[in-house]
Image (cartoon, rainbow, N blue to C red; front, side):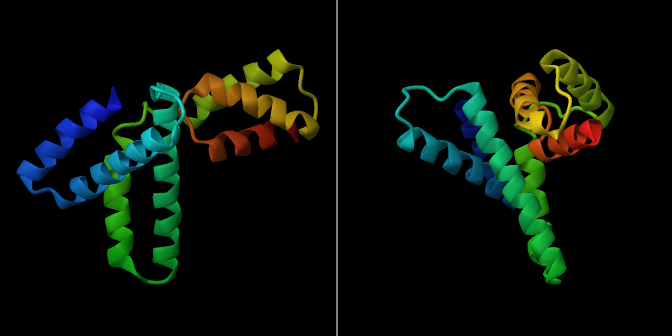
Length: 147
């Protein structure tokens, strides 16, 4: 389970005095603990863990953009370091070519013809990718294929 891995990595980062890793791992641990306390389910599933990690990655990417636009390079650097740590816990991300191939299969599978079918395609595609691609990339490729 991810929680156990996080705890071990946290101990290692503390011993190594790796501040960037500590910040990233603590962010993941905090998000998982929040989910655990707020969740009515007894166990956190692998899908729940992936969703949390993807949310943290998205937050970091958005922060990096804002900090870079504002000329706050030191804060952008910190967010980048945390982003790299968090991404280690996500499944291996697929390339654009691999994503396009799966989306083409999903379009055929769902008999999608127009942009009106985008929601149907996205629902099936997100399940198939299981955290191996972010929603923004999938959405962009679906739009490209349907137009």
